[in-house]
Image (cartoon, rainbow, N blue to C red; front, side):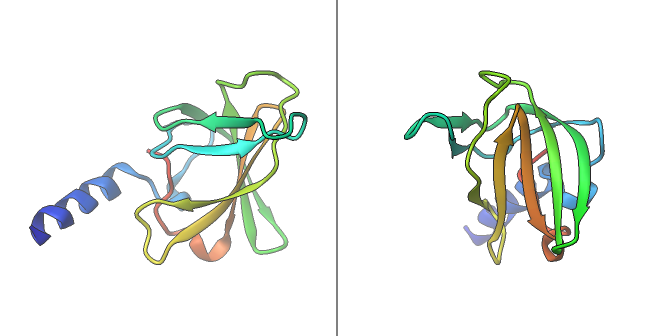
Length: 124
């Protein structure tokens, strides 16, 4: 049974790319879903769904020890969409890696600490 579980985790890791492996102008699919609260509409959530395709548009190193990944969010419900930032735990990471996520005018922004760049992302 342990071997089976180990193989399942290994196969997940083969599909998911490390944050450091993501390349500009490439399409990626999410390996997990999460929700972000809209700023304009209190209590309204944006569902960012597993298997949604996103295009990596920018990678920016910030002076605070964080890297910002900006993705074109193609399923954006409106060009002026803005959300609060939420902390998202990346599934199947140990120890658990957390990233900040928000949407700003149909750009999904993911903030990850430099120390976590060599860990599994939630993109394949």
